[in-house]
Image (cartoon, rainbow, N blue to C red; front, side):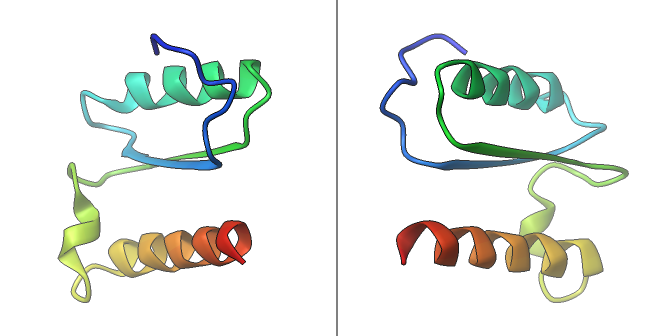
Length: 77
């Protein structure tokens, strides 16, 4: 959460709610939000770290990738 986030691009943060980095994800999102940045933070329950790599076998991985695609489409169009 250290640094200057005043000019950071829109940010999407995903973390498993049960992983060690969950608190860091929330702190990062709060820091970006505090400086007026655009941030979306999602904590996903009951998943392992980097569950996104489990596409297509894990439904939550498919859902996360769909959310990423929607976010990118919205912010890069």
